[in-house]
Each structure stands twice: as C-alpha cells, then as structure tokens.
Image 1 (cartoon, rainbow, N blue to C red):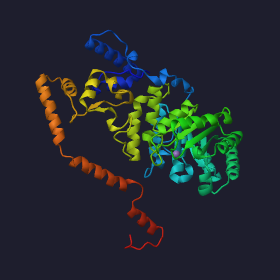
Image 2: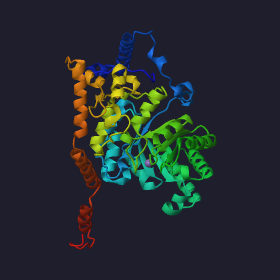
Image 3: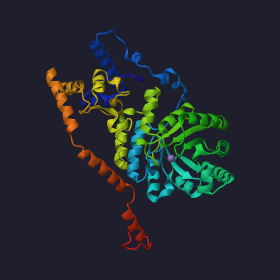
Image 4: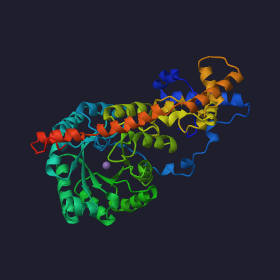
Length: 463
Ligand code: MN
C-alpha cells in the first residue's frame, strides 16, 4: 500500500485485467514501470518505494489510527438532505447495494418518520439482506423511534442538539429536560432491541461538561456508541484532536463516532484528525453530499486512509468512481470539476512539464493512479501542452512523426487553444447556474400553484 507506487501511463485496454484483481494489477504495473524507468535512465536499480517519502507514515501518524475503523455512510440520510435531493426507495436500494458490495460496514438509510415513502425505503433496505449494518435516524421522540422499530432496522441513531444555542432557540428546552428525554428514549429504544448510537447535534459548540454528562447518562441507559457532530463545520483538525482527547477519558470504553461538515473545507481533514484521536466510526457521504457545503466525502476519506496512512480499510477502491457516478446520476447533483478523486480534473493533465513527468513515471504528478479507483487518465491538449503528451498520443495510435512535425503540431495546438472563443464555455456556465436555480426542490412558480391547491388564498395575478 505504498504512497509513491505507480504504474506507467496506460490506455483503457488494461481495464479488464484491473477488474479481476486490482491489487495484483497494480503490483504488475509498478514492476513494469520500474523496469521501464530503469531502462530509460540507464541508472542503478532503485526500488520505487525508496524514491518518495511518506511522512504520514514516517512520522508515526498512521500508527495513531485505532484498529478496526468502520465507515458509517450518511449518503442516504444527510446526503439526501442536500437541498433539492430526493431518493426513491428503489434508488436508495441501488446505492446501498453498491456501498455494501464495496465493503461499507454501516449505512444510515434515512428517517422513517419523514414520509411514507421514506418509511418504505427504510423497511426495504432493512430487509434487503445487506452485510452492512442498516441504521435509521430518529429524534428523541417516541413516534420517531416507533417508526424505526416498525421498519425492522438493526440500529438506531438517536439525536438531539446539545449546544445551549440550539437548546434555547430551537428546542426551547433546558439541559435537564434534554438529559431526561434522552435517557428515557435511549432506554425505550434499547428495551425494544435496538442498538443505540447516541448523537449530539452541534457537539462542538456545546459545553464540554454537559456533553460528557449527557453521553454518560445515555451510555448508562444502554447506548453503545457516542456520535460527536461538527454540525456546522466549525472545527479544525487540531481542535478536533483536543476535544476528542478531552471527551474520551470521560466516556470510558464506549465506541466513538465523528460526523463532520465541510463549511470551511475541513470535513475530511477533521475526520482524519478524529480517527487519529481514537474515533472508530467516521461518517462520510458519497461525493461529499449533505446539508450546505456537505459532509466529509467518502471517496476522499477512503483514499486518504488507504493511500496516505497505508491503512487497511476493508473497502474496495476500484469501484469508487462507479459509486460516485451512480450517486451523481440519482441525486442529480453534478460532481465539481476540481473535486478530489472523482472530479473531472482529478486525473487530467495539460501542462507540458506535468505531462512529460507523467509519461516518464505516473507518480511524478499523480499521488494515486486513476486505475485504482476505476478511472483512466486524460491528457488535455491546450495552451500549456508540450511535446511529451503529443508524442504519447501519437505513439498510442502507432503513428510515426518527426521531431519537427511534433513541434509544429504543438505550436498549432497552442495557437488554436488561445484563439478559441470562450462563448461556448461561458454559455455553459450561465446555463448551469440557471438550471441549478430551477433544479433544486420545488420552483417558485410551483410553490404558489401548490399553495393554491392547499387552499391558501394566493391571488392569481399576484404571483
Ligand atoms: Mn449533518
């Protein structure tokens, strides 16, 4: 599971071999790449591993990770709470099956009390025979819990806010009222055979002493796991380390779980920090879907653990791109162009210097190779193109060209790219924004039609 191991640039025809056994495929690729590199350079044989340092491992940070980390997927719950996103029960099943096949061990499938269709989805997934633990979410409210019991899930995530801000303005409850309700409903759910994960919303803006007291009481009432949530994404990695370090000794041996949001772009970094601090069950969503700026992205978390930490996640990375594309299609939320791992540009190269490096050894400018997650590399031809990528493309098509022909082609490409009108790209950006406005949820026009249908007196001409 090396950091710098890499294959030489390959075409798509190796895909079949790759599907058979990804680990062996990569190994063969690396060996071939080493042999080729040594031949090209004519220098001494240096194993690839010793050509790059990985300070995550060398500095001992990877050894801080606890054994047995299990990812808790939130795509079907928090991910579905992305503005404008709905999944039908059948769509949830399709996503859950793929999550299950790649080895995700815990799947939060939704909140049954939300709607009849949602309850049908939760019931369907609970009975789908998945290897993964199927979990449903519930407020500290009796009818929510009963809905979960009716669906036949293995586990329940019981959540209530713990910050004084949420208590005063949202729940209008005192700390003692929250504590009493939490204990009562944890006992109720446990008594009905559900394994309870107790979740405090807005944990990281709460009084640490109160949070610890609340968890202790719920653990005593039967909760098996404590889920800390950076609900509005305000933590930093070192702050997470500090907080978890403070909380852990106060909770004893209970399993800790972390739910991170990406409001400041730190969700995955914070999640890794949480794991380094001893959290066993990190939350993530495919494509980083979720409220506002989203949750920690599953594919980024898996690949960071796998590649940067050299950690055995038990998750098969070769289908991560397939998973991302499935969720992109079913959610209707396009993956950002520069999104790590699964974005369009994540394995595209244009600049001459980079393409030259990639052609000589893929690891020069790629920390992981696209084949690992079921993708292929792309060379983009444009203003920054150099001869290496052009030669590589011609070679791939078994076309002979002289050095001066290649140079002439490079010039033509640069001139053409620089003179190309931006009209099409700009129209695309405008259309994307326009369509995004209209795609999300119910449109303004539809809202007023439905309001009239509900019997609300909305004047015809006024809207
Ligand atoms: Mn959330």
